[in-house]
Image (cartoon, rainbow, N blue to C red; front, side):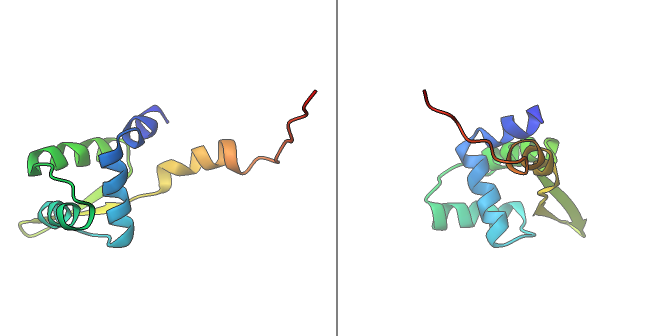
Length: 97
C-alpha cells in the first residue's frame, strides 16, 4: 500500500491518472500532449515518463506494447485494499464531549 500512497502523493501523477480515466490506453506522446493542452502542465517527456514508471511500479498503470507503441492503461486494482480498509467499513460516529 505504501507504493500506492507514494504514487498518489504527487499532483502530476494524480493528473496523469485523471487523464487516463478520461481516455485510457494512451502513448507517452499522447499523454504529454494532452497534459500540456488540457491541464497546462509543461513537464518534459522524460519527467512524464518517470512519473509513469512510479505509477507502473505501484500497479496503478499497466502497459501494453503494440508494435513500436507502448500504451498506458489505468489499473484501479491497487486501490481496492484502501477502499476496503477505510471506506467499506461500517461508519462510526464521533461522539463529542
